[in-house]
Length: 171
Image (cartoon, rainbow, N blue to C red):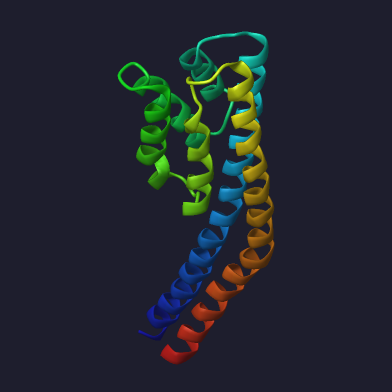
């Protein structure tokens, strides 16, 4: 009977440690997604400037070159452009995908900025809107990096500490 108790305590400790690791990974995922979005915007800017391809075609190409969660935004926006304007399609795509990402409310708000001029302005107007969005994204990336540095270690240690405390209490 004692052996079962000790096995359960070890499993409890391992589970809480793993939970702390999983929570800490959210910070890395957020940073990766923000960087993917920034790279996607760079591709978008280059495609608009040099190829004059239609936006849905550009979005299709971008979705093949970025991470999974970010690619979903571009794919959904491309699909919705068949029905909605480019701005509405972009905003609806972000709203639809936002719960599947690790982005926070401020990140979502920043990304939605791109939709304001999407498909409405000339090439230069769209490029300037992309650059404005990139500047805001750089701020978000810096913030995400600082959060990752600060909180990632905290959550890992917190998971282990809570697990150890529970084991001690249950002994």
